[in-house]
Amino acid sequence: MMETVKLKWGPDGLIPAVVQDVKTGQVLMQAYMNEEALRLTLETGTAWYWSRSRQELWQKGATSGHYQRVREVRTDCDGDSLLLLVEQEGVACHEGTYSCFTRRVDGSPRALVDTAFWPIQPDETVPYDIGTVLRELTAVLVDRRAHPEPGSYTSKLFTKGADAYCKKIGEEATEVVLAVKNRDRENLAFEVADVWFHTLIALVDNGLGPRDVAEELARRRGKRREKEKED
Image 1 (cartoon, rainbow, N blue to C red):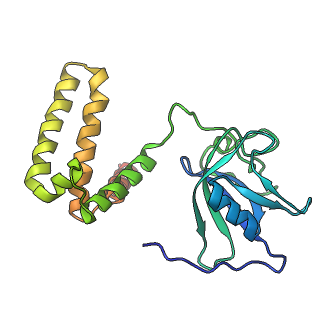
Image 2 (image 1 turned 90 degrees about the horizontal axis):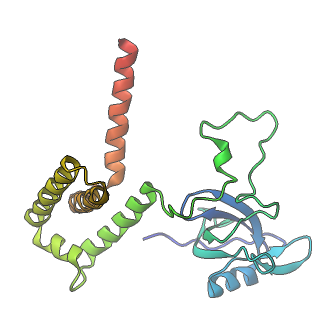
Image 3 (image 1 turned 180 degrees about the horizontal axis):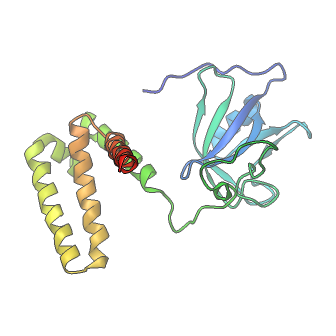
């Protein structure tokens, strides 16, 4: 369970709030909240802030229509700043870019990733990247294992144990092979999703998760690079 921390408001009664896209992880903007703005945010599910220049409360999107649907509010370890995880409607920046952080400080090194990614609004036809989906699904599976629900297919597999989900992994892997052999593109992704789902159940039941697999793949990639250098 995540620990709660008592918030530390500044001398002006404000606390900085960093806003992050819950789907992509993009940092969208930074603003300030007072207690009333935080209360309204939690009550309405949309982001409210305090304008230091206008000295008034404002709801993000009230005039532009670019609302921020708040999915979670977190605080840092000191309790002196907030992190809002949001679903952004439209764009976050008043200049028309998806993120406010589009300018690089003079003298700053360039990021290894394509920095053009940051101001670009994500493709709505792909609402989640695979990492996000796997993390969210794993969290659900961990909860189902700890708190079984009557009628839940996942809970039943955990209750029946390894024989049950191993059988499903074998069956679904065979379906993947058949889809590949038959060049059945329409069903291939569906069958791979089934394999991944049941494999995740196996990982969770053994105290593992996607991160462990990612670390192993990264280790193998690192070993391959070392071998290429030797050759």
